[in-house]
Image (cartoon, rainbow, N blue to C red; front, side, top):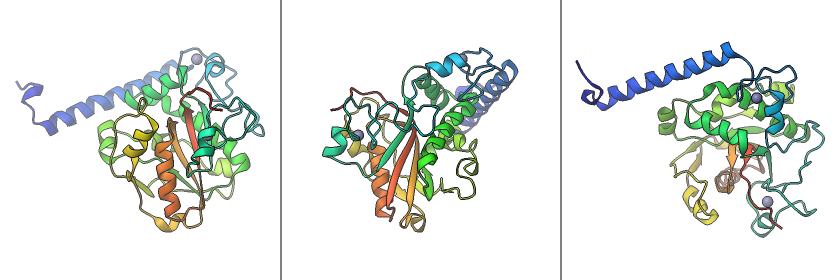
Length: 277
Ligand SMILES: [Zn+2]
Ligand SMILES: [Zn+2]
């Protein structure tokens, strides 16, 4: 009889990935059988944002966007980086002093409470049954953005290939598979180009890193594969979370060097920070 430590590393990896896939399939089945809210299990009849969320969990999501699509900045955030503002200005002090390469950022919610939990479970613990619900939130943010903007190209913050094999999936791409851009932009949807950018190296997780350090870490981490696509284009860049904005800023730089005339960001969650003046 052979034990796991006798197995060569590649076989062990395959065996682990098989277990991981059973786990994912089991979770998905469970979510289907049990039904109800993916966060608390309650059943609900009056879902507003997502049919997979009960009214109580929807209410508790720390979201920024009102259900009225014309109301673009109900919670008064910096137009450029989506930080909370206490004054009537449109931009925070940081964006005025050192303007990022992107023009606007739209964030669905704060990276806190249930949403933080759901994103962590989804990305790091293979809770793939949360994908349709998270895709609904992303869809809602896209509807808000589409109300006033018509981008030419949509790209995603790329994940390193090695990371995708390690995780077994690409979290952002999986969410986008649930979204039909034609249902948002009608007959002239933007070109969806998830392969137009690649990530060249990956840095450590970034939550506690100072902005300066973060900027150095992401320097030269991205490259454009299809330059022609971005010539004079208005690009919408999608990510799950914005923290310091350094990653998005670096990509916006790269896109602009490739000819993009404007880059905006759309994210599911924005980490909280003390409001800037
Ligand atoms: Zn719930
Ligand atoms: Zn700002």
